[in-house]
Length: 380
Image 1 (cartoon, one colour):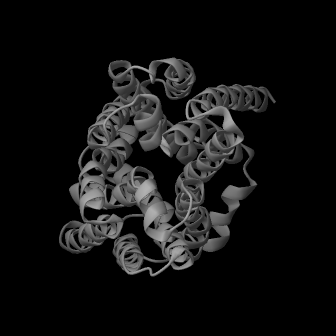
Image 2 (tube, one colour):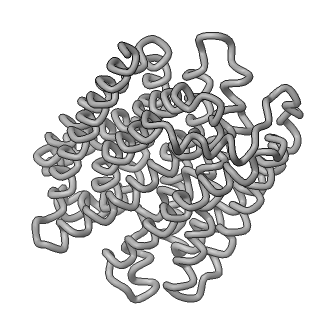
């Protein structure tokens, strides 16, 4: 579990550190901040493309071998980000770094669920995802601080080092997993024919889009709207990470006890928190509190979404589990894009939170429709 979580720690660090360094990347490459935001979208696009392709094409590969290979690719791509000479090359490197993301988390979640005790699947999945949450407490703030003082390239160098350590840990600690079922590409692709798989992916995409619309521009929001000293931004990112850790644990607990109700509660809470964030961000104290709450409500949704996908995917669980992270990164790209649109339109840096609240409500509506469809199908 520690080795699997360490991989999540590295992935979480590279996924979110760019958001805190957008001003540095923009100035270093002589581009605007909204344009630098496309670096976030490039990584997310890599996740979206890589998750289904890798999950389907490697269905027959032993899970231990696949996990190690994915982390090797992740490490090499992040090293390429360090040496990218220009904007176009960095975009390509970030895209390649995103390719293993969804497949790694999908396979790691299945391994955790396979090893878990009965009735504790969501908790085991949450344990793997804990690495992603802890990354926002330690990895992202530390890498952001290093990037601010030594240049943004140094932040990606830190990620590459984490990748090397993860590869060694996986090789040393992951068992052979011979008892895990091996499928085939045709079986895995069967997940794409299940309506409830698509409904779950849509609710994750829409619901998380709002959170990423806010988080993608959190640095400038806190410095320009809250008038927070830039040196305190890593502290705010750490609070966001603490919220994710708490939300991850809470989400696993709720999902094991009342999966649908827990997911609905988390999504509704996110909608309310983002709406209040529009006002709360104008005060340093309330801004810090709500940065924590945004992380908590958002992360609490992940174990429930992952477990729900595993339930509705039947025998195509590898692809379904990987697609969850593709959906979340579509939300990442979409959130960064729509946040940039409303900012560029002159609505200010609080506008992404208002739009994000509406997206969370839309995700809640999708969940309601999915539940009604399930009940009608059960009735038939």
